[in-house]
Image 1 (tube, one colour):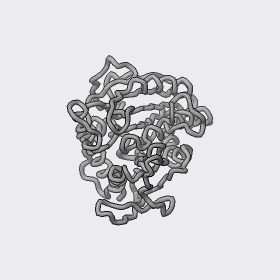
Image 2: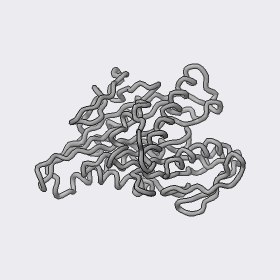
Image 3: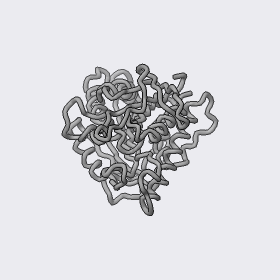
Length: 330
C-alpha cells in the first residue's frame, strides 16, 4: 500500500456445520496470499487485492503476527494504534478478536485481544531501557450512539472530550491499572459479559453494539527523562448486515440504522485518511470515529480486518464487506 498507515486484510472463516449441511458452495476462488476472485452483483468475476488475505486454514497467530505485532511495538514507543474487526454477524469478527472465550481457550485459538495483552506486557518487561511503566484499561460500548462504560454499567452516557495533555478521552470512563496478563484478561471478561447482546435472525448471540477496548501505556526510560505514552485501541464492531436479512423491526431496526450510520462514518474517515491529500477527515460524524480520532490519524498505525463468510448464501454480505475494505486501498 502507498504511504498510508492503514493496513487492510480480509479473513474468510471455514464453512460452518450448518452451511456444510445445506451443501453451500464456497463463493470465492483463492489466487494467492493477497488476492482472490469473487463474483460481483452482475455475476462477473472480479479480482480483489488486499495487504493480506487469510483463508480458512489461517491460524489465529498468523492474523496476529501480520496485523498486530507492529502496532504493539509502536505503542510501547509512544505511537497510538488501532485494530478494527469489521463484517457481517457470524462472519468471525469476535472469534478473531477474542477466540472462543477470553479466559478459557487453547493457545492455538487465542484471539487478538489476549495476544495483544500478552505481547504488551512481554515488551514492557523485557525492554532494557524501560524503568517504570503503567498500563491502564478502559472498555466501552457504543450502543444507539450512546457511550456506555462496560466496567461500570451505571455510567451509560459518557461524553468524549479532548485536551492537550490527554488527546481524545472518554470523560468519566472507568480506567483500571492492570499489572499483568491474567489480571487484564479477568477484567476484560467482566466487561465482555456486560456487552449488549440482542437477537437477530443472523445469529442468536449477535452483538448489537461496537465494543472498544483501550489500553493506555506510559513508561519512563533510562535513555532520557521523557515519559512516553501510547495507546492501543481494539474495536469489535457491531454486525454490518443488511436490514432485510435480519428481519429487524422496531427497536432492533433503530439499532441497525445507527450501526449502519456509524459504520459508514468509519468508512468515510478511513477513506479520507488513505487518499493522497486528505482535506477534511470527518471524525465528528459519529461517536466511534471521534473516540478513534487520535489512534487513526497522524503517525498512528491502523489495521482493518474484514471478516467474511465463505458461503454462497452469504455472498452479497461478504461482497459488501470486501467493498468496504477495497475503497480504503489508495
